[in-house]
Structure formats: structure tokens, C-alpha cells
Image 1 (tube, rainbow, N blue to C red):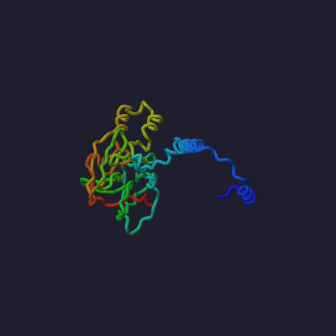
Image 2 (image 1 turned 90 degrees about the vertical axis):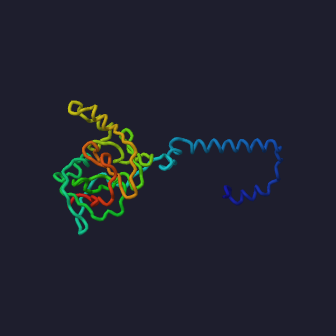
Image 3 (image 1 turned 60 degrees about the vertical axis):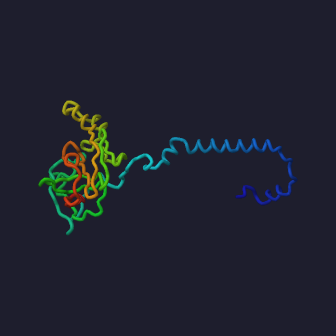
Length: 238
């Protein structure tokens, strides 16, 4: 790219040649040039604000889920859906979530394909209706360390990836809680829940309720065979 006007460029081209510098000075100039470029590179690309943002989530060992909505909405029923009543608060994230007496019946789709992480699944276990969020996909290993879920050793970084109570994280909970009305030691233990690694077979999935201390899930009875799944929750009945 030319940085000068054509006339200026022509004038310089016809100018007499200047004296040549000794080769030693040329070498020194080249070395200085390389040093300047190197320092410029580290100043720009090695700063925390730039370089850190360039690292991908895979290299940090993190699994993200930005697709699953935290808030359940109303949906119309179809020939491929059915409605259920749900009275447990095991999926409550602070808005009486999925509780029929507050929001109406729950619409469940018979078509579960494709199964995706974060789906809320309806299934039967030991003759009882159950709801649970899909955490571990077939073939994955699920582990909980001090309230944080890990999948194949990678941190699950999403709203359902750690212990919560009514949608509050540990720090949020203890900032807002009335110490006179709760067992602080019990809740401290809850937020530090740990579980040894559990592997889901190719035909099973690992599920968790959203408020772990208010329901049962794969922590107690292991991964759920896919054949026992009866539907995927779409939302509330319109």
C-alpha cells in the first residue's frame, strides 16, 4: 500500500542514492526492530483483558449451556402432548416453578427427540411420577464436588449446574436468609454436597431436580433408562 502521493513517490525515486550504512549498524537496527515488535505483541495480546477472552471454553475445561431457558412459559397442547399435575416444589427456582396450584397443569410432549442437556423429563420410578432435569447424557460421567456439577471432569457452568435453593446460589442464599428461621449448618452442608462419579450407560441419562434437597433423582437411584422416560416438559398449559 502506498503511503505517499504519486508525485512525492516519483521525486523520491529520482533522488540521488544516500550513503550506505555499515552492515553492523543494519544488524543492530534489525534486532531493535524485532524487539519492538515482540514488546508490542505482548502488550496487546498478553494483557488479561484480551488474552483471557481469547481462550476457548474447551481449553478451560468448562461445559456451557446458554440455550436452556430458566423460566418456563405457557404453551399450547397438541395431539402429541398430554397434561399432568405436579404438586412438588423440587423444581422450584423461586417462582413456584412447575407447581400446578400456582401455574396450572404442565404440558408434556411424547416426542423427546432429540434429548438435550437441560431438558426437563417426565418419567415413572417405582410407580411414582417424577420430574428431573437432564444433566448427564448417555456415556457421560457425572460428579458433584462441593455443590458443583462436573461432567467428564469439566465444570457444568449454567444455572442448573450447582446446588441452589429456590434458585439462589450459596452466596445469595446466606445473604438473604433469616438465620433464626433456618438450620444454617444443614444448609451449609447442602450447598457443599458432593457425590462420587456416576457413569451413565449408552441407554441411560443422569437427572437432577433443580432444588436438590427437595426431591429425589439420579443421586439416589442412579441413571434412568431411556425406555422409562415418558415425555419432555414443554411448559404450562395455556
